Image (cartoon, rainbow, N blue to C red; front, side, top):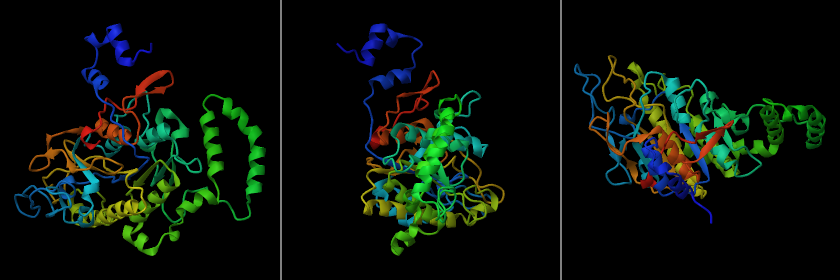
Amino acid sequence: MAMNRRAFLQSAGLLLSPFASTRALAALSAPRTIGKAEHCIFIWLGGGMSQIDTFDPKALGDNKSVSKKPGSFYRAIDTSVRGVQLCEHLEQTARWMEHVTICRTVQHKVIDEHAFATNLVHTGRMVSGNVTYPSIGSLVAHERGAADPAVPAYMLIGYPNVSRGPGFLGAKDGFIYLVDTETGPAGFTRPDAVSEERIARRARLLAPLQAPLTNAPGTADYANAQQEALRLSGPEFMRHFRLDEEPAHVRQSYGGEFGQRCLTARRLVQAGVRFVEVSHNLNFLNGSGWDIHNEGIRNQHLLIRELDLAFSGLIADLKRTGFLEKTLVVIGTEFGRPADFDGKGGRGHQGSVFSMVLAGGGLRHRGAYGVTDELSKKALESPVSIPDFHATILAALGVDPRKDLMDGSRPVPITDQGTPIAALF
């Protein structure tokens, strides 16, 4: 008779061990929370989006007065979900909030360094001296693979760095990237004179040279990545980046370059890419991006409007094409902003509470999850850790957030004791 894991632990007396983790024991008895989403589009707002000026508005402050009264920089507006408000510059998104959940009580303690906070939100863990942890994109690629073998599992639209990488999972679960929507991924376009037959001949010539690499320690990943690049190069893969194939009204509904990145992401998930990160790392309209210290806050509304157009356009387009229920859309950022204004009227950093957003993906959406205080400085109800947020993404995509991965011979939990937000399933 087969013995399940809980029965085995009970028979071994491990459930009574004083050294057992309380949270781990609770996880054993918790019901599995697994969704049915097939893809994820992860929108990254690098610099630290101000939650009190976007997705968690409060009473108006005043950064011009002598007292610099803390509060929101913009007025709040109602949305399609009763009781849930957004800032006035998210007017288009407000119409789609029945398909959205703002996680308003995300929190961590890394607020002084953008790179460390970016790494934490992407990997779910602090930087370690003896292991490089995989990003959420690589975790999804590793667990689910591409939905269609003709495309990669994981793509990045923006500039690459280690925070987005595969860590100990290896190059096979890394990303293919492009930095703009005009050219597609660099190196994948063949010269017109190179036919399929010539590519096949080159591959045959290369095969004997690759064989030693495939079997050699430390080089197998490189050989596999090289083979994957050769497989994907050519018109079949590159056609997914031809945005001129889209109707003009669809392209216009997304807005400018950032919106076109989001449209590209929609085309990629339709083609079978499992995870696409879209980075908002452009020539920022306000001069400082989402890092709104000092005068950077003056034209913050231009960034918010750009996000509003692209995000609402993406939701509408995914719904139109039948992909919204099976595509989880995430808005992430490294930390939030305090209600207080700095000396020149901008805002500093805040990790005690900030907002990240989930949309589509077959979740039970509610407009907002979690409650913050009157200045969006601390969580009053339902705090969400970064591992919890990762567990929610993984669970929505059908990945068990309690499983272990292998770093060589060492098991590593796929999240750092994260628990999915059960209310969304």
